[in-house]
Structures are given as structure tokens and as C-alpha cells.
Image (cartoon, rainbow, N blue to C red; front, top):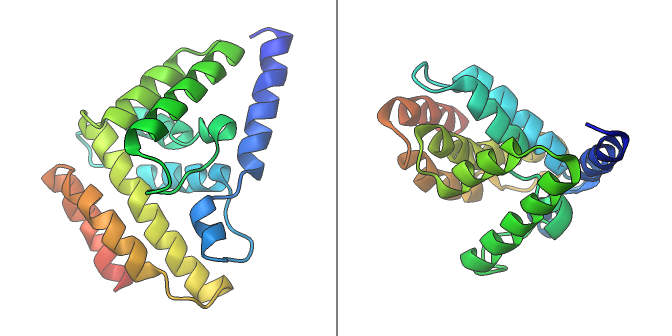
Length: 179
């Protein structure tokens, strides 16, 4: 990477650390997590829960970059935009990021995640929903006192059920532990 690319990467990562997640803002959670905090949490969940048949490194990479385009196009909650418009915006944003820092693998990983055709992508998508449930529980216990877990568990369940049986078992056990 040349100096210009490094400086652009510094700016992108800094923005990711500052970008607060819109869903928590909309629910008036005090001190909501950033996209960077969410991505880190997902990477840890991958390390703790990934079934052996999955490529763990690929899953960790997907977890870390899955929301990176939001630095450019913003964090849009479900229903705010059509799925097609959200996908278009995020794909264009990822292309801008890749061009700015010269790292084509980011776009490949993001596309794989978005398409959800591989076991790794489906697993990370399921974890994306599950991490929201875990975060909702954290906010209930430590921060806002509001009851959010059930809402996010209902949203996570369909994503979990799209993954393979081994993955479903692990992730459903985590959901049950929160009940």
C-alpha cells in the first residue's frame, strides 16, 4: 500500500469506529455500539462457534468487513430502503473503498456474504442476527433497561434456519440460553 492508500484506510477505519448503529439509535439506546464494535463482536463469535467444516479465516474476514460499506453509504435498517436499493448502494460503496485502498479481496468477500450462497456466508449472516440478540440482552442488563431481546431473536431465527444443521444447532443453543 502506498501512503495515499494507508491514509485512506486510516480514515475508513476511523469512520467505522465512529459510525453508531442505526437500529440502536432508533431504539434510543444510550451509548450504542459502532459498526467496528459490532464487527469485532462477530469475529469473536466466529472463533467461538464456527463448525469445523467451515473456513474459519474466511468467516472472520467476512464478519470484520460485512458492514464496511456503511462508512460510505450509511447504516440503513430493514424496511428503510428496498433490498435492491440497499444492495446497490452498498456494492457501489464497497467498490469505492476497494479502489481507494487497493484491496480487491474485500469486494469478493462482501459479494459472497451478500449473496449468501456459501455455507460460510450463511453462517456469518446468521451470526449477524445472533449478535444483535446478544447485544440487545447486554443493553437490557447494563444500559437501557428496555426489553429488546425478543424482537431481535425473532429477526435472527430465520437467518439461523437458513444455515446448515451443525450451524443451526450451535446458534439455536445460544438463543435458547438467552430465553
